[in-house]
Image (cartoon, rainbow, N blue to C red; front, side):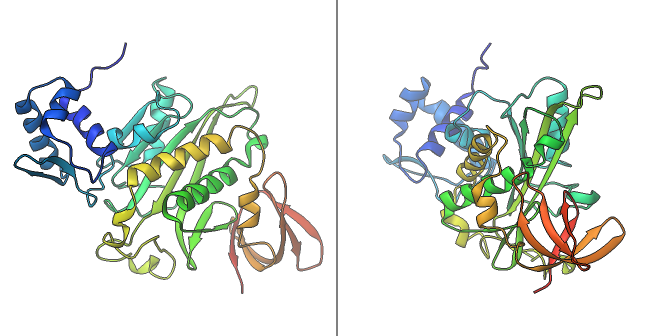
Length: 326
């Protein structure tokens, strides 16, 4: 049974779809089948939530181009697959955790997503924290139901990286660099990290579902990055004023759309190879507690990295952390 939307929710959806354009109060009331008083009450509620809605006598209402809050009503209209579970939290421990809980509970199927304005316990690879300050990035997790075993889906993270590359290029015009295995860089600094987690059937080894967590820095936090990240982390834009032309909701939807398209087949995206920073460079590999150097040769069709060890032998990396030694 479909959930009945409130006047507030339908108004926000209408304003997001016409962002920057004035819509008369009469037209809004007509489209939402409500009174002008109900429209005003919904506008007041949205303003209290932080939405910049401009109004004037006989002019109607307009959602400011500077208003860039994440919202279900702003994301769903841009999705190619709209009939999915979609939840946006003001603050959460981890979107990956919430997505897994929703999937296990049977509420969230293939293509569903969880987003947050900020995370207070965001997670990266190897148990590290992922810095997720309020409103300066996109923090989202997408639920997928890929076919095959965990090993057959090693390219899932590569597909996610290619999806972010495509969505950012399409929405902002910015071309990112990809670093094996799960990071994206811009102007020499990391702007996006990806954490892929799979829940498998113990007996068959088949994947029941996977959660792809994506953290993308849109602009630098107001007080800058923490000292330990200053030389490492970057963003697409220096500040929110530069990023005003970017519709966060549209970008979030574009990432999900691209991800669902990329993961239809178990194939390594050409973008992942063409825009990868690693092949052709000398690299340092951190594998557990062990560190070693090698020459990166190429990305294989299954997503593994072919390297030449210092003794001249060639091996394939399925995991590990690499850094470039230029």
